[in-house]
Image 1 (cartoon, rainbow, N blue to C red):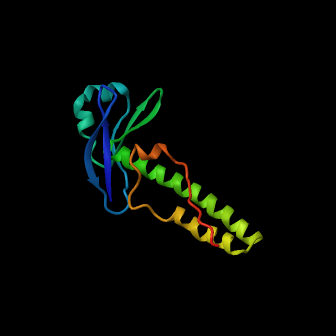
Image 2: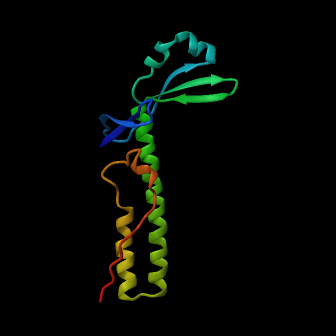
Image 3: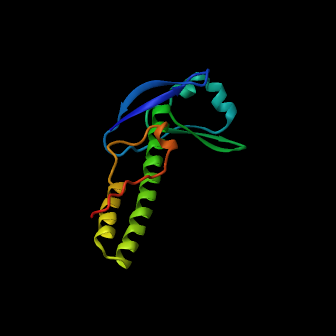
Length: 145
């Protein structure tokens, strides 16, 4: 699947970034680990350069443990989170439609239930950062006459 990435510029606008092609399920691997911020700082820019694609680097500090990801990996995870949210909302809608159909098994209720399943079919690719801000579901229901 292709994921369109956006990179924020210092002016606050977004610029299109490379499209990354993921095959199969993306798995993050353990990346480099730094046991203090001082250790991380000492390595300088080389510390960040050592983080490969699909690596989750670990920075342990007194304030807590932090994970560092490359931008394409972060954007992919954001897309997956948006997809999960979309599926959760779709499942709630299907559940409600099924309850209505159970109580009122008429033609309109059955059509509503059938149409609600379109909300949970897989997306061709995860949502991009821009699309993930809108998680509302607005189904179009056509009643049969």
